[in-house]
Image 1 (cartoon, helix red, strand yellow):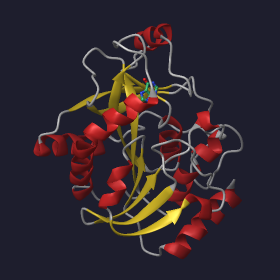
Image 2: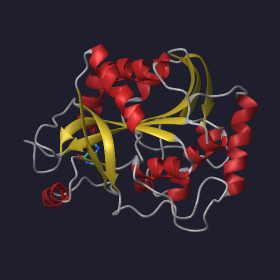
Image 3: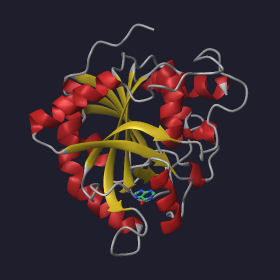
Length: 276
Ligand code: HPA
C-alpha cells in the first residue's frame, strides 16, 4: 500500500509543486465546482499510478489543482466507490495521497437520499457524524503507522470547527443548510423501504454510497474533514416514485449553484491548520 500511495503522490508532485491548502471530493453531479478553479492543472486519473478510472455518469476522472477563493485547492472530479468493485484501500487511496501531500483539510461531498422527515430534494446538509458499521472496514489489514495509529478514535470524524465555519457561510450566503447523520449503504442498488425504516431506527438521517471510507481514512491520517451532503431524493419508500440515477443527477444539478457558492465561502474562511 505504501508503494501505491508513494507512486501516486510522486506523480502528482511532478505535475504540481506547491503546497495545497485543501482537498475536495466532488460527489454525483457536483463536479461543476471544479470549473470554478482558476488556472487549473488538470490531471487525468488514468495518468496517476494506481488510480482507477471511474465508470459512473456524473463522475469524471480528473484531479483539478488550482486557485479557488484565494486558496490552493485540489478537487477530485469523480471518486471511487465500493460498489464499482474497488477494494476499500483503492476507494480511500486518494485521501492517503492527500495526506502524503500534507494537505491539512478535506471537504467531502455526496448526493444522498433523505430519510429524516424534513430532508427533501435540494436540501444541503452538513454531516455531523456517520454510521458506517455496515461498510467493510477501510482500516482493516496492516496498520499504516506512518499515517495514524492502529486503534483510531472516531469521536469527531467531521470537524466541529469546520462545521461552525460552514454554518456561518450558509448564514452569510443565505443558503439553507440542515445537519444530520449520514449512513453508508454498499450499493449499487438503492435500499429497500424496509432497510430505510431500519436505518431510521438506528439514527440515520441520510443514506448514500460513499464518503464514509474516505472520511475514516482522513481521520486516521489526521486530516480535518468537513462533510456536506446534497439530498437528491427522498429515500426508498418515502417518496412518490421509484428511485433512479437520472433523478439524482437532475436534483444535484439544480442545487449545484448553491453548493458552489457555499463551498467557495467556506474555503475563503478556512482557519489555520491545527499543527500535527
Ligand atoms: N440511496 C443511496 N444513495 C443515494 C441515494 C439514495 O437514496 N440518493 C443519492 N445517492
